[in-house]
Image (cartoon, rainbow, N blue to C red; front, side):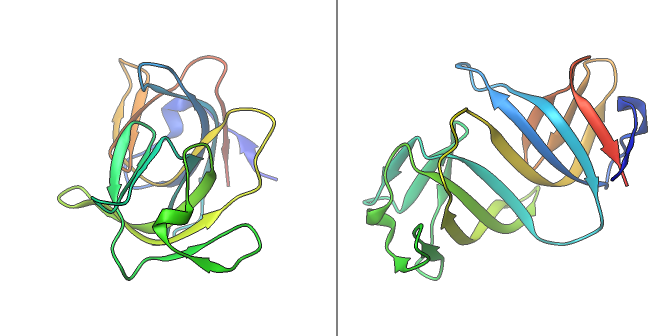
Amino acid sequence: MGQIIGFKDLKVGQRIKIKGQTSAEGKLTAVEINVKPEDLEMCIESKVQAVETAKDTLRLLNRDFSIGSNVVIKNLPRQTVALKDLQAGDVIKMKGVYSAAKGFAVEKIKVQEPRGFRIDELQGMIDKVDREAGAIEVLGYAVTVNEKTEIEGI
């Protein structure tokens, strides 16, 4: 169990896991932030908004992700499937690597058990902290932090 910390304790380069909610306008507000040990693996978990098989893309969190032929996709029973087998509304977890220049490069996709409520998840390094705006940037997403956000350190 970690200790409760404040927004002021978050730093660029820290690896964190964010659970939040995305508004209709596409803004992500953090409900919970957990500082994690260093690791290169980055994750995005959310509901699929659209699948474009002709363009080999998935839309999550109002952003399109290119899905290469080398990306392994597993369904709920953990069988390997194709991009065409995914559909809008599926909850998936994408694992991959991130760079500011190239964005998020998807390496693996797993369909997750649907939840009874809407929650989105990002796991990666903090790229930017804007203390005045009460926001951080992770995996290219601007994430708003407010007084209701629970922040836990290791």
